[in-house]
Image 1 (tube, rainbow, N blue to C red):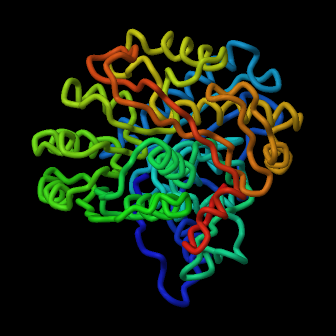
Image 2: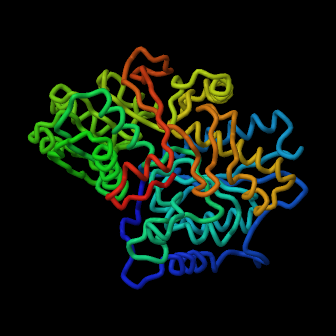
Image 3: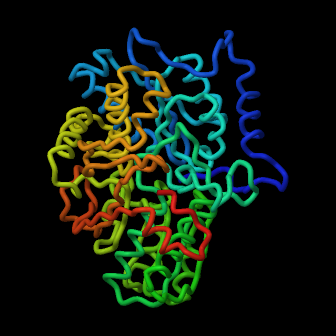
Length: 448
């Protein structure tokens, strides 16, 4: 999502060396003598997990919701014997101004055995060399950009070595949420199959996530033969308080459908001002990549119109299976009386819950928390008890076969707040062969 590193690097600069060096320098002042690069709690005492999320600022609610899902997963695991008959502990850090320092500190000072996060695509890409150097398994639960799960450097170029490279996969990095490639494919597929639209406009945040989602949506739409005319594309700044000039630009282009990639507080700003400008009444449909979130819909209340198609990586009522019900029951038990946390998981809930349980499965299969052994078990691992349905971590890309979910905003959904949920939900997954074929000629990596 949030990407604070919008540049692709200067000509001649090796990003892996630069970022690893910057990360190392940032922790030079840490107290104590660090005898080894990697952490780990060894074979005795609790198994330690570390989480790094945005827990302040524009994405505070999103990061906190991911942490909440992880804590519930840890509680459920501990209630059922822990991992390898050892209790599990989890510690969270805010990205802050120096996320690489937080990552290093958790591994080298707190001796975590595995990590999960992050809330920012830019932070993820900038942290790649540090994560690789530390060596412990790291599972992404909230990240959109496909680059971290693209390993084909021959075709797409090494992100850390090549100024124009987009393959940023590293050996110990995995992902359990559907990335931007899958999400935009699902929206493009649904629109092509269900709407008779010809004119499409875009409005999204002015940074890498906004531009990248629009590029992928256009590429998949073209690959599916949608034959759209792209009539306008505008990008208000991230966290903008006034989007009305850009909303008016979109309206003046007379689109049939509007594609958006807002998330968190930007969704509430856009929807509130778009309703005032009459946008929802003048177009056939409005789509959003990851705007379907209980916190967002709760904040919007009656302002959010019904009948428009919003998406996410998880929605509580989209999966009718016992594993999802187990997750929902555990989450509700933990937060139904909490005035600050909505008692249904966020759109990152399924992927975060899955990451914790995947570590349990991999560590128990390995018989230890040894990083290399756990990573080996994670490659190709199938997690059959995922709330979203069985998923597999691809042995090569390390991307889970996780679905995106798209649904119709409606007050008929059963939600614990005054506002819309999603009904008539559909899920989409994406395999590498299909993605490669549809993206042909775009130079965009599949990341699956």
